[in-house]
Image 1 (cartoon, rainbow, N blue to C red):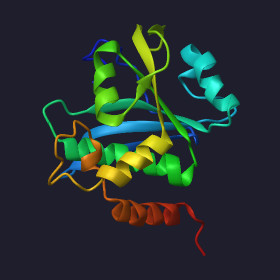
Image 2 (spheres, helix red, strand yellow):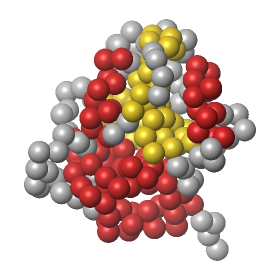
Image 3 (cartoon, rainbow, N blue to C red):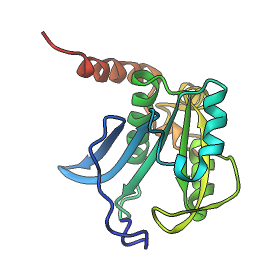
Length: 191
């Protein structure tokens, strides 16, 4: 997907304890992937370009994470599959890693999508991302906003109303809690 878009084709999912890569499948075929990077002493990938903006959030006490390497099969137009992938990512960030703020670097042509569909906001002017040799905005959303939207709209995809958002396709709060408990149990040592 990155090569096709002209961002290079040498991207690898490197082993890193502060990054979790999730995949969505349909009938055994991978249809999408996304990585969440949790802040650490090494920072997050977006620090390379946007350290000044991310540091402002850290200094006010925020625990940051970032969404990277999102790739989704362009032949599928499944809001449910994309929302499910994002929801599991937010569950990991919130319940497992206690993140308060989420960042994503996006090409200018994708900015409005993330703003409308997930409530992200641009935090500064566009800059050049040397990892993909392309312009990028740094977008931010608070986990408090994500949680409020999930509580308000999660599980309502059968009747999403006029919402132009992915949140109706997220799990309901009750379903989210059950999934979060199962995921947290997977992280606990056995026996």
